[in-house]
Image (cartoon, rainbow, N blue to C red; front, side):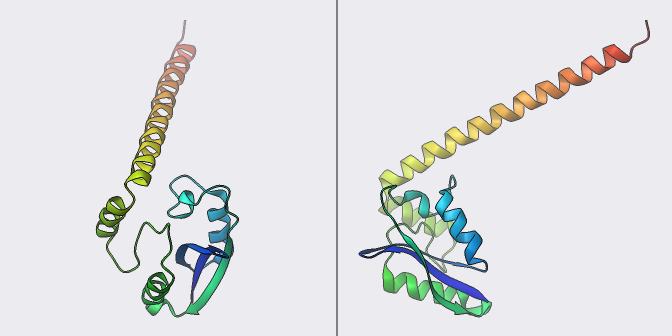
Length: 139
């Protein structure tokens, strides 16, 4: 079974999605994890609710999600249900240019941070290997 849900406040639907585990999905939306599609772009001062709209069989999950997407017209969906990721991303970039540049800057800075950590860890493991080789060398 798949749950179709929305993130909404009384006057606005912000996001429509589907999940097999509503509790974990709501938790991830509320944490506003980096690059969490949709909910990351809901303004911080908005108090939204996680609302389950429907429960459907897996086979029709995408169709049901698309029905609610078309009917409710959410403001923050990046990927349109039933479209390829590339097609949906291109459409989102055209309709949300300011959000795209914010997202791209966040992604690039996060990528640089991860790369620096990996390089630092690589250097540390290299130094640790050298230190252990020196300490195990007979005198």
